[in-house]
Image 1: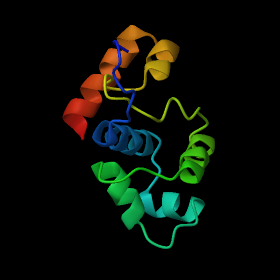
Image 2: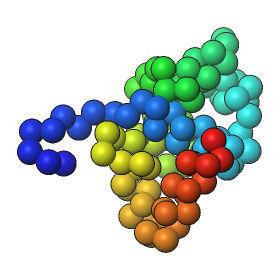
Image 3: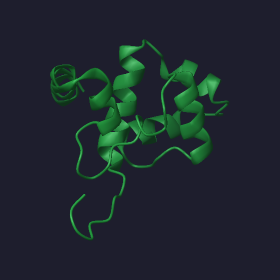
Length: 105
């Protein structure tokens, strides 16, 4: 982070990232909706489109469902994918995931 730059969440990239995780793990929106006890899938589609973000409770539940940390679900303004994920999988694999997100979604 540079200078006084605010470390905000990039909603669109975070939504793309959540959608990518669901697709890569073969988790259907209907199943995710059931796991999160949501009445309608519209919230999830809103997250995927970058219009809204999950509540903190839902972010936590997603981290448990995906067996990951909250940091690995959130993409900030300066990132393409979460930096903690990049550290865990290594630069070569992170580059592949960035490519997949850019062209597969």
